[in-house]
Image (cartoon, rainbow, N blue to C red; front, side, top):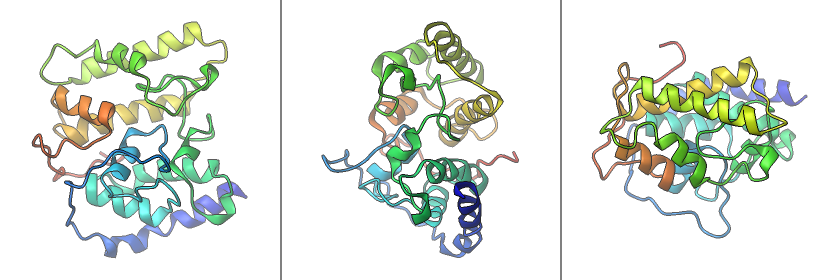
Length: 231
């Protein structure tokens, strides 16, 4: 039932094509308030902090996600559908056809996985909050460079997988997790860097992960070329 509902609602993305305005105000960033919900995804958290998704982190629907992510980041519907389906499958009440950002933390249902770049594995307790120690282990691979190369990003990702495989007795990382995790890496390289070559500024990536903010005031602009699964 959960899966069929998620797929049915996913068809709504076609109707979102007419809703994209292309006019986005990136200047209204605020950290989350005490009653706001955030999840394990830095991208969705960032958009909520900017008010480009509901600031309270609640009642995310497919149309809201598809419109917000396309307008703000120029990420295609196919990739957005992955996050949306993960949320819908893990939703507290999937029959309501919306989810809160923390629902994405339901382990291994679809989008959430072990060996995150900035979150602990569920085995260790909190897989939703930013983990500075884990993030530093990623940052070590490119902290002294000006930009993040594909090679450095791939090495950082592989190190996270190896590290958690050694220390987490419940570690799981199947083919689906592999695809999603490396797609996440490709996405941040593409959205904040060149769509083909990557190489985003290290400072921008730090802002994105550490502050959950889009580095607009530092010079980043919405990519002209869309990031999607086909390309």
